[in-house]
Amino acid sequence: MIKSRITFNTHETNGGKLRRLSDLYAAYTAYVQECIDQMASGRRSNVFPSERQTYFKPSPVLSSQIEKNARMQAVDLMAVWVKGLYGRKLSKQIARTEGLSDNQKMQLRCCGKYNVSRAGKFGKGTITQEMVDLYWGWVWDESVSGKPPTVSAQIPMMMTEMTCVFGPSKGSEHFGWWLRFSGLESGRRVQVPLVSTPYLNGSFAKTVLVQPSRDGRWRFQFSEEVPDKALDGSKGKVGLDVGLNCLAATSDGRIYGPNFKPLFDKTYTKVRTLRANRQRQGLKENSRRLSKLETRLSGQAKTTTGTAANKLVKAFPDHTFVVEDLDLRGCKGQKRFAYRALHKNLASKAVCEVVNPAYTSQMCPSCGCISRGNRKGINFCCTSCGRKAHADWVGSYNLLGRSEDKQIGAGDHPSVVKRLLVSRYLARRKAAKSSVPTTVPHRGRQRAPVPSGRNLTTGGPQKATGTGSKTVVLRIT
Image (cartoon, rainbow, N blue to C red; front, top):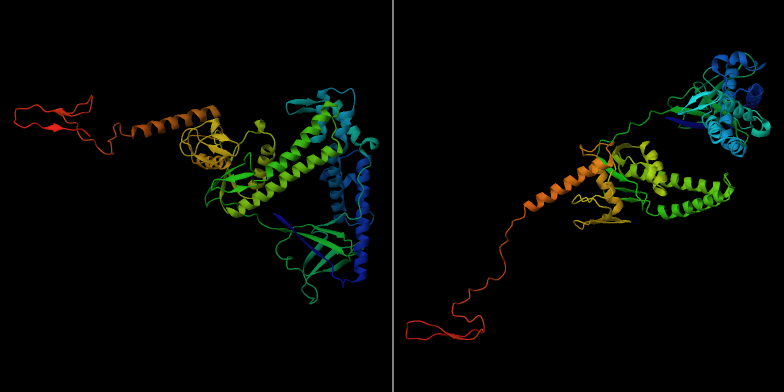
């Protein structure tokens, strides 16, 4: 990982040294612009390092090493300009050009999007030389693409270890760091004192960017090489489900972004309505309002998911997040946008484990019953056992359990997963029924046995028969 450390020259810097630095900067930027103009006139979007020495004209004032840096920067600027032409202008040029078939337009889009410069097989199709020549003809046509890039007054000057030396001062007690660079005069280096800062320590990259600031001082940007922190997920696992009603839910019951869906759906509905209206009118290009709404939509997703990812990493340090390997072909709306953005953010900051998501949102975490009727919006109520819970939490809890299930792989088909889960549910029910006793003793009050002399029809008294001299009369009350 590279971190930038920025400092400025001190206020006590000698004026003569600053003038030499300004003269070097002016000569450097002028040579960069000269190299760009030479590439544009020669219709070259790239010049390989092995041919730069012979292709570009030499500078009369710059040293060979500074000249090398300027050429490299000119090639990079030209490559960025050519690559950005497709999104800025040439995609619209392809759409409004008449007489092109759908296949030819597709070839031109591939040329612009992937910077294809020669004919041949590309993916599942083929790009012809005619389409390659047509696209690159537009690139170098100023009436279509505009003028080549112009070097601005704020472009940074690249200095490598061959053109400058920087480090802490050894003989001076007034300044912390010095930068020594090669000037326009041969054999004479210029030393510029830098403002002392606690961040200028450690190992630095080989390149220093120098450019004038708006307040008249010079800005020096150093690049510090910081080793990447190893991602450690050894403290445990956390199930994470990107919900339909909230942004994310964890297996321990935490909900993130509960208000994201209504805000996103409001903007998403506007985008769909506006795009449908333009399609009905036969308008293929985006309007300014549509482009603005789409930018706002993607910005909402990136900002909210980035915040949620930071909170998750902070709440579960050194944990492994169990996420679903979702097929986005059946998803739309905030689920599709949030899934990609959140997983991309989280994968760069923590360890993620991908599992099979089949039926994790429909399976009851208590009895294992699978049914679409279990879930209704944000509420989950099992049709078999009556278990009630938050629907998105159920998905995250089942994802956590799926990570320990060795019988279900990430690539298994949903039908295979369903047969296995249904068989488990039926076996669990059968085992539960077999454990219940067939006869249950009555635990209530026991009735007294009915006497043999009771008249069950009338309930009245009846004489008892016998051989004795006494007659016993039983009155039933």
